Image (cartoon, rainbow, N blue to C red):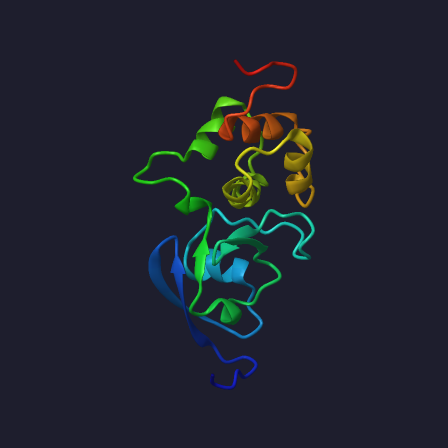
Length: 168
């Protein structure tokens, strides 16, 4: 590993949504800014810049992380998945379809981060109960929805019955 010097730009290569991409970043550049400004992955939103709101959540080697808390140079050589990578061949993923079907967004600013968190969560917990879904979402701030439709969309994506109904 070469010594990183302040103010000097360093080449960073990542696997972005399955494709090798490279760009330049100063040692202090956050991954969120690198994704947006250097690589043009505009679906990653920057909210609080303190890791609290969750808007900048991406997946680093499969794990949901806050991209405002990771430096671009730390991501060098790793796989990064963003909301742009959820759809395949312009077809929404089942989770994205569920968000659409259940009206689980309003302004949409927080939605990419929530989708990235839920995509990992549902992979590891395919049949969560409502409390588990709400716990998974507890690191996200959404001022528009009140979370009811987001939880409904997560349940729908996991193919769980609505609360108060029984399975056949």
